[in-house]
Each structure stands twice: as C-alpha cells, then as structure tokens.
Image 1 (tube, helix red, strand yellow):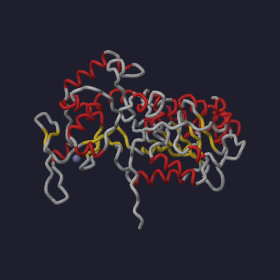
Image 2 (spheres, rainbow, N blue to C red):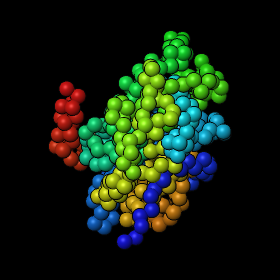
Image 3 (cartoon, rainbow, N blue to C red):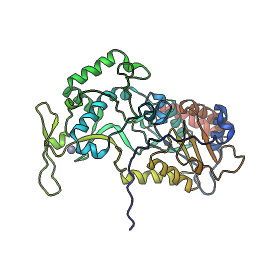
Image 4 (cartoon, helix red, strand yellow):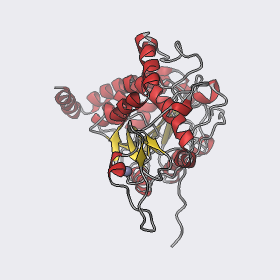
Amino acid sequence: MAMRKPIMRIPYTDLLVPGPIVPASASTLPGAISALTRFFTTPPPGDLPNSTVVLTGAGLSVASGLADYRGVKGTYRVNKTYRPIYYHEFLSNHEARKRYWARSFLGWSSLHKAKPNGGHHAIRDLGDLGFVKDVITQNVDSFHPRAHPGLSTLELHGYLRATVCTTCKSEYPRDEFQNQLARLNPRWALLLEEAMASGALNTEDPMEKRFRGLKTNPDGDVDLPDAPYTTFRYPPCPKCLHRPPLKEGGDKHLVKADREGAWELPSTAGILKPAVVMFGESIATQVKTAAEDAIDSAGKLLVLGTSLATYSAWRIAKRANDRGMPIAIVNMGGVRGEDHFFKTLTEGQQGEEGVRVEQATDELLPALVSRLRREQHIHMPEAAGENLTTFKDMLS
Ligand SMILES: [Zn+2]
C-alpha cells in the first residue's frame, strides 16, 4: 500500500499576480454577474453532476471586518513581520502558548462580535435555489455554519469556536475559555474592558484606534508588539486535570494547576489548543477525504476569496480541474495556478466553461442571487415558487 502523504498547513506569504479576467466582459459588476449566471445555469460537460461545490477563504470574511492574508489591507501586507505560531512550537513551549493565548484573548471579543456578511448569506441562497450542495472553507471564523446551517460546510482548517485538548481530544466552548482567561488574567481583562468601553471595538477596524498596529488576523489573534506575555496564564483541560491520562509506556502523565487553576510546569499533558489546524499541523485524513468526496460528487467549482496559496486548498481546486469541472474564481489578487485552470477554455465562451473575476464577494454574490432568482422564475416558475416558500418557512 502506498504511503499517503499528510497534508500540512503551511503559510505561503508571497503575493500572487492576478491573471486575466475571464471572459473579458466580466471586468464590470454587471459583466461578472452575467458570466456567473452562465456558469450556474449551464450544465457541466459529460456525465458530471449538475451541482456546484464552493471553496472559500479569508477574502470572503473581509466584509465582516476580518483581515485577509493577502488582500490590499491583508495581514501579510500590513505587517511584514507577521509570523503565525506553529503547532510544534505551541505543543512544546509554555512561553509560546502564553503569547498565543494573550493575543487570542484580546482578539476573541472582536471576532466574537463579527457576523457573516452578504457573501455568506448569498451562499445560503444559492443552496436554497438548488445550485450549491457543499461548501468547503479554509476559514476558522464559523461564519458559514452560522449563515447556512442547512447547507453542509466542511471546515478544512477547523474552527475557533472551541478549544481541544491535545492529549484527550475533548472539546470545550471557546466562550467559556474566554471567561476563564479573564479570571486568570485580571490585568489583561481590564485592558480589554477599557478598549471595549472606549468604543474602540465598535469601529470598523476594531482594535486599531486603541492599540496602534494591533490587528485581528484571520486566525483570530491580534498582533501586540510589546506586552508582558510572560505573566499570561491559561487553564488546563479539566478532564486531564481531574484524571491525568496515561503515557504510551503506561505511566501517568503529570497535570498540575496553580492555586487559581492555571496550567503550570512541569505538567506533561492537558494542554488546550484552539480547534483549528495550526500551521505545521496536518489536516485529519477524514477531513481531507470528505473534501475530495465533495469535489467528486459535484460538477462545477466556485472559488471565493482565496488565492489557493495553501497546498490543501490548491489541491482541491486541482482535483476539480482534473475531473474536467468548470471553475469560477472570485478573488481580489492573484490565485495560485489560475493560468492552468483556464488554459483549455473555448474561445468566446461567456462563463459556462470558466469565470475569473475580481469583485467584492459581498456585493457580487447577492446581486448574482437576485439575477438567478429572476432567471429561475422565467424558466421554472413553479420550482422558483416552491423555493420561495421554503425560504419563508426558514425565516418563520
Ligand atoms: Zn484532556
């Protein structure tokens, strides 16, 4: 049996050069809407199923106030020295974990307040209209499951809404963890309270007014250039603290907490991490397989707000391309391998074989939904009527 190579999440910080707009008429908003309407309403070639799988990235959440990695105001552009924490570093280094959780503590409240935007809701509508069956996202902000609980979402890189124990794999709500962090770190809690009371968290760029140079990254933490991370404290996994798990050899792990309940050395287990796939960490095999299955059961791929710079995402798009699936890409900035995805298009095609546009997803997608509703109403008045009923039922 061949060894299956693990897919590791690795940051790719280079900026990619955007390819040409496809078709050329799609350089305006109405042109982009027309091209995507053709894309959705034309059946895919051969025996491919007539449904679309959506693959999204950080660009889709920009309209919710989160930073992109590579966009105009993206993390990699604004902060050239930004370096995310790596999994092995988090696991092996107590100091690195203090730093991570301190940043995450400050970033959580603005992330928690942020909401899905028109782009996410348009994906829900595309599902209701019968065009989209599956969503694969690289985002860890939980906006997809919130915006469209009825439409399946595969969270390729996990989610920030929970913490997970690196020893026993138990998950805990991130909200409760936030309260524990506040209790263990009263001075940081005060700093956060002041920032919130001053209204700094209500501005579009939440923390910036209060802390200059401080930004919420797509991974939910903030950059804080100078702060006493060394004093930050975080709790252990309650289950492992209560009953220390066994090591591989059969001896018991040591899990200790200080008087107030903060994890302390020389503990060897019970470390909680965010339930996200950290950089340098492998994507679980079942998640990878589920993503492949989603591609294999669809006939078209819509890529939204991602440069496909991470290998795991690029691989998904390549799989769709290899299956002969038409691909539509909406992204500000270049996309890894995009030339390759569009090189076999018939000259003069108007979007049915492939689309490449640079438009804001929160404007383009709702407008596309309106257009598709009108088209569906013209061609299938009864089906459209049913869908409207379903939609109203969902709201009531
Ligand atoms: Zn545990």
